[in-house]
Structure formats: C-alpha cells, structure tokens
Length: 166
Image 1 (cartoon, one colour):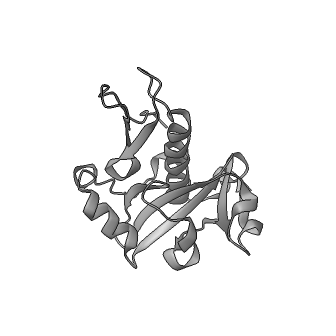
Image 2 (cartoon, rainbow, N blue to C red; image 1 turned 90 degrees about the horizontal axis):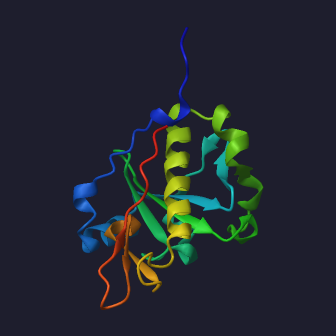
Image 3 (tube, rainbow, N blue to C red; image 1 turned 90 degrees about the vertical axis):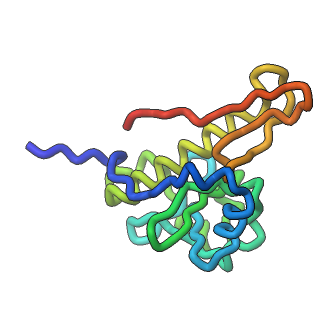
C-alpha cells in the first residue's frame, strides 16, 4: 500500500546560508525570476489546482523587504510569500483565485502542497511573533524574513520559526 504524504514533497532549496546577505535577498526580490505566493487568513491563491505563483509586475505595490519572506529557490525561480490582511486585498482579478488551505491541500501536487504549507507556516510564525517574548518591544524581520530580532537596543532576543514535522 502506498501512502501519499502531501507535505514532504518539497522541492525548495531554502538557501539558509545565503539569507544573511540582505543585498542578495533584495536582488532576488527585485529579479525577473522572483515569484510570489500570496496568503491571507486561512487561505492562498490557486489556479487550475496549482499554487498561483505571481510575477513581481503582477503585485508590485505589495512587495517590500519587510512584507516579503524569502522561501528559497525552486531552481528556476526565487520564491517569496507575502501575507495579505484578507482575500479582498488581493490585486484586481485575483480574488476569484482564493481558496482555503484545508479545502485544497489534498487536491494539489506534492510540490504545491509542500510549498503552500511552508509559506503558510512562515506567515503564521511571523503573525504570532510581532513582539519580543523577552521585553515586549516590536520585532523586525532579518535574513529574508526568516528570523525576527527584537528592536529594543538593550535586548538581543531573536525568534526563529518552528520546525514542524509533516
């Protein structure tokens, strides 16, 4: 019997060793190879039962280093996720592509399910760690958005994403 595991089919090279170079991350963010996953509340955008990967030109106004989280490289594209407040803030024409994560994961390819689960996990982590757990000051993203550091000058606390087994 073969069991299909949706969240273990990831193809992303997370390039953790390159994330410390903020200029390199900004170059990736600005490159023609950059692709963006948009998430909101409990959903994401899909098209024809595939993750909808948007080009920079599709969502230019939404992209900043502070709102983008670098997921890694697919080999052909640099992948980022941007979290929207809700599906109504999706760019014109894209709100119809909104779907609930729970409702679609079983219908996606292993690669797309793993990509969207990773993107959603990073977004949820960022949402839950807006403030330092030590002193309560706001946190700020570094390393492509995959590390949060306390903004207080007398606190050097850092928050790392959870590692959840699939």
